[in-house]
Length: 341
Image 1 (cartoon, one colour):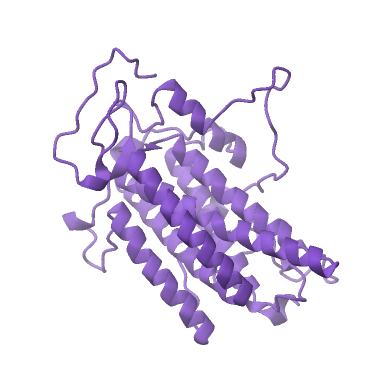
Image 2: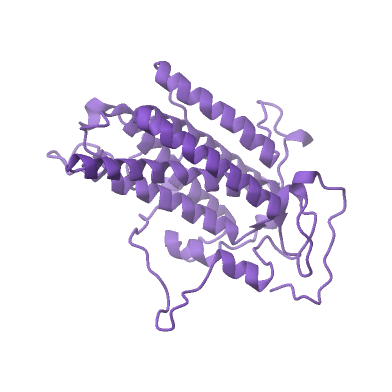
């Protein structure tokens, strides 16, 4: 249900901090914490029609009904998604330690923006560690706006190198671009639940500009370090979504208990009837992040210039466990080179 211009704006009680303020206009809710505009009845991107069309523009061609994607998402079962676990790969050399240290710095910045504080064992119930639905959506949107960068940068640079070298890439480009597309679908899904305000958009713009150029330069120098960095970053993503799912299951997020997943999510993940709630959506997203964690830790173990992509390879012995795009085989710390090459 849209908020019509005649509807008076509801003001959230409490003085917002500077980075929480939104531009005020009729039909929106002003002062929403962490820079998100939400509807009065549910978490949705219900802002004036022109703003909504900016995020999800329909095809403008009169003879085109819709636009299809070339990347079809693999089907996950509930049991497979439930089996996803938090995990960590130990740093084994200076490259790994550099990647892990960079992720910790970025994690601090992400926590500052979203208001997230990870509790130590026994501190889970303290008020300062509690996250609201608005806090989680802020974190999700900011996280996914950044997470879509590495795959695109890596795929682009490998594509250009393939053109320069006049030789094949052995399957890496497709997987990297598909990863970037998948992260963008996460972002578009969460944008159906809440629409960022002006200052949140500035944060996303600044973070993307700095991160893209930094990752671009680092990938030119050491692609394996960059893939290890993404693997560690995805470890943090799995941890984030695991805690959000736990909060939802324990009744700490009442607004989401009966909230349906957006239609864009139903279509993309092929969510079955009866499995289309907000909780199911978080399970799907966490499963994707767990697969990205595995893929990038695996890529970090390979010889970048010559090894084929094990996720696109056909093996001589199909009976042995091998890397796959779905969740039939999952390795938290990635596949070692001698297992796949």
